[in-house]
Length: 362
Length: 221
Image 1: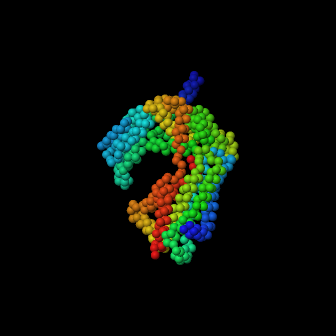
Image 2: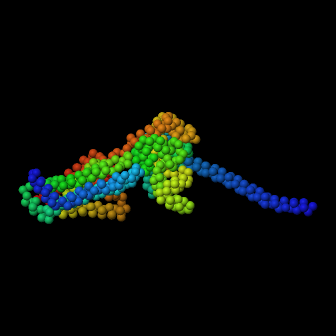
Image 3: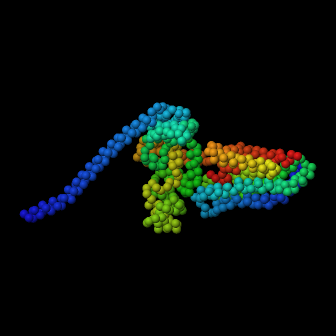
């Protein structure tokens, strides 16, 4: 009997913490539920506040519709319609038929006094800009705020920037040309010289295994990357000895250090401008539905998506991209013809001044 | 007239030969030094950026050399006349404007030596260097730019040097007045940017000193 009593007592003693644990779990669950409900209420209130703010920001505003652009603006001297017409032609040429989806994302602008001393109501919706901008500047604002329709995260990650129309396409191509020539990378240099597989490597549109060796081909590049770009990062803790080895030209140490970097932190040899140009080339080649095809399969490989958008295989697309870049070599550093004449003119002018000096007027 | 020009040229050469020789040596050396190392066999294609950076740094010396040559040649052209109070020039059976033109022309001819030195030095530097693919040498463009800069600088300082002390005083007075007005406007919080305007007029577009601005690159993309 006493054994049974003892067992019951022991069981009850053992169950006490479990019961306590159970009550703790329940309390935590209740707290979590309470937090969730509070968060939902806050979300609801934020939505209401946003909605009210939207109503306040757009009160007394006009809506300008040009193509798929919907611009909600307050009355101001800004040349919205003309700017929207100019911007729309660029937007339409980039997004093609997908531009029809843009009315889903209306743009709210508020023209304000350029004098920063003037007090104004604070709004949390839309973009403020001074009312003294000209057509060109207003167009640039529109182009730089446009939201690419159905732009997915995978495309954004690969691109490294937003895909927007550019007001200066030639300058963008020239910038990529300068990169191809000056970036300290053998892979980029090989791409410049016509090796399309290297171009695919540096643009990351082909096989992406062994990215480190594909991007930074020589031990010297890897060493330079570690010692110039990541020396602070690797200088402390367990990686410090490897950094010292790398500085002593040990490629295995440099490679190991670079392999230890977190995913997607290995610097790209070419910056986002080159990739954006590749996307633009694909969209231009693929016609009005190219953008729709580009965003149709977010889970597909980037190379496949670009090829599908362009309507050609990826190699041909990269060849076309490279040809575009090579054709955009910056103008040589010669003086413009008028500058030569101006210099000669000023030389003659000052020479004439010397002839007419008061010293000789006796 | 040719004999007179030869005489003026000869006298001016005697007064300024040190300037011409040193300027020519410097003009020949700068392009070669700016591309030093570019001809090394171990220089791979990776150093394009470094090479451009070095060329750009050295490029600042060209407008400085052009200005210095113009200034010194102009001073040298007039210094003996100023010392002799222009008595020799006044005794010559020659109109004053012709005399000034001969002096101006003689200085211009002597300045051809450093200009040619830039052209030869640049061409040699580019020919002997191993440039990374995509980069190009611009020896002729650089020499042409240097020539214009030298002539403009020479003409400006020649005109100033040919003037009287009163003219120099007026020029300095105008500059001082501009500075004074700008300082007073700044103190009075008046939105007046005379320096900016002067910079635009002098250095941009067809301004007299525009040829000195920009990038003086012997090698570029």
